[in-house]
Amino acid sequence: MSEEQEKYLAHFSAEISQYRPMMYEAFEGVLNEGVSLYPVFVFHQQDVTVGIPIANRNHITGDWSVNISTLEEFYIKGIVQMEQVEEIKQRINGMPQQYCCLVLAEGNGGFVFLSRSEEE
Image 1 (cartoon, rainbow, N blue to C red):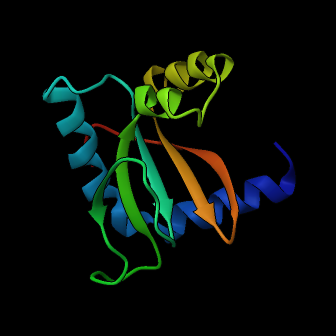
Image 2: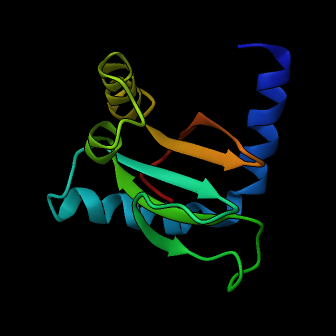
Image 3: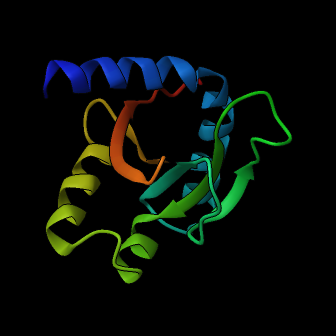
């Protein structure tokens, strides 16, 4: 990972710290309801057609709206290719376990993986 990417990850992680309790609840809900073993968060500042909205930036303090989706939906909609699926699965279930986040801003997008803990 480049130094620029590491700085962005640190900034993004700090910026969304207020979302972490909501992320934990949504992640656990997807797992406990048997929807998927691979939840994916979509952080966005524009309209998106993937996932289910769980936070609207117009109604909360924060710059991001958040949807919860699944790796399966990402594959079906062509957002990820088969080669990416295994890597994402390993990171979500790896040690340490991680949140998979697709961050969409200003016409650009990319995956960010954030460590998660059982206590959030």
